[in-house]
Length: 549
Image 1 (cartoon, helix red, strand yellow):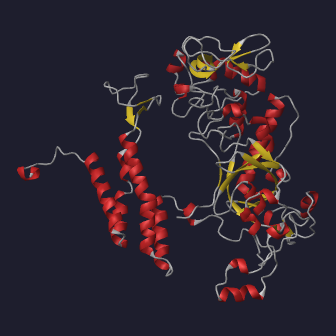
Image 2 (cartoon, one colour):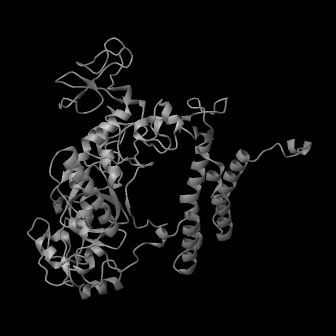
Image 3 (cartoon, one colour):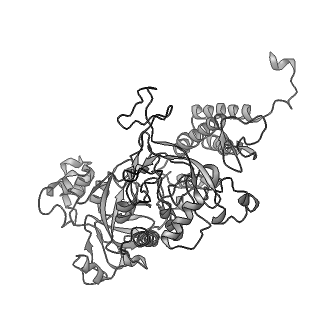
């Protein structure tokens, strides 16, 4: 089952506007407007809560101290204007561990956070005043809690401005947009919707809209939807500069075309090094076009991989190590360093195998007839130019195209909604293609997708917690009272029977219809027995002596 094209903003679940903890006070959707604490007025008017009803909340947040006025706070900047510092103390005896990280009395590791009471109403009102904003946003969401080492929250002002511009924040404080990687070395101004005059300003030697232009290694072409989203992010950053940092605006973008020439950071998952890129145009395809060097520098080989982009100024202003999770792998997928200039010698060797000729020689075609070893066929590649003045430019291509976006703008996989529709379409395609073994396709779908899903969901059902529908509080076992121990709300399961059994019947049907291996069919049978033993009641069955023999 192939990976679909992607063009979508990166969002956590549920998506927050600010990395500010509000605990269970904000309900399931983490709404700051619902974080009412113990306010009686809010309880009487829960359907329409305004900022005046926001109350005091108790959340686990960092403990910091101002080195100038010695004021204790959770904020990174004191009211006097000085930057605060984390305070390390013993979690048992509260001893100040300024000179060490382990308590000499309790022998416990020091921490820099504790449960603190925050007057959210006051904090929110002060933020609106400082920003000169009067709107109260219906959708303004924080996070349940912080997972960084010192539990440092973002300034709530940033969340106000993100809510204003309808964008969400990722775990490191940045706003990201995910795109499927597609490689290209050439383009025409017409197919990326950019005037030739603008391209000349960017350094390209181009005259007509249909001129074929060689793409610079760090220039990128983004989807139209990504461009519209980046406009909203740029407006947020300009507001942040003017209203929070008291600086002049930077982007002043009204349309996505205003962002042509802007710098972005490209970052791949599971890595910690971003690559500097420049936006030069937009495509209707749900993907991001860039030079193979650019993709390879992110440690990607363009086989359907997905990366993100973020505006450079967003990374410089809002990214912080203080927000990253304090756990294994917490610093992955974060721009800890930035590559400003790609060195072809240092990128993945797959990009060195890119051929750079404008036509294949006759010897190449003759070699294909005798199945010659590819290494014995001499074709000029990037590797032959490494370390020379021609390692970046002068690449050729063998086949002309009327548009780099001429193919499907969205794959069928992405258009189809349900997993069953995707699977049926794939099996139907396997039936039509003579070169494909449809039995093998069916078996692979069952073994690599449905079986792991069924087993995982069955395990999750047996180990699940229960939650309150009112405050979303979760407990390991249902309380005897049947109600939430915190607010008295209704307790429900977090994993349901339908989640476990949704693929069971169809998997068995496919296994029988396509004649998959006996081993796979027996695995499904045993799994079905386990599911039935869990959900079917034995009380309705009349048993006889034979059942015990």
